[in-house]
Image (cartoon, rainbow, N blue to C red; front, top):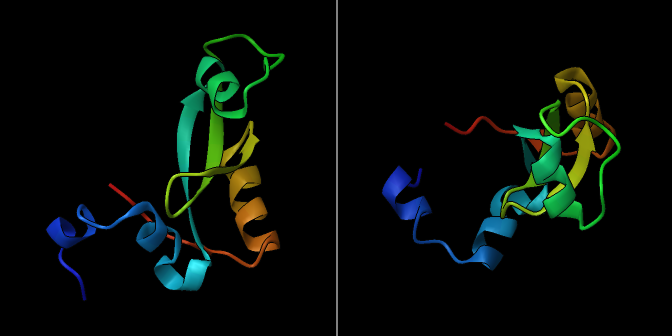
Length: 85
């Protein structure tokens, strides 16, 4: 298994291919950040907590208002959720 320091030196393509390209992680974000990620305004208060489903390389795949909804999105798309700290 790769060490944490090894993961830091991976290229974006190598990160995207982790787990055969089938892994995702969920991270909490604010609405203001969601707008930046998707390039259009999000119609919620700017401090509203949201959850972003991200591909292994950090590319946002989905944004939802609940962690359960984000996890459901991961499972519906046959992705493997991973924990990052």
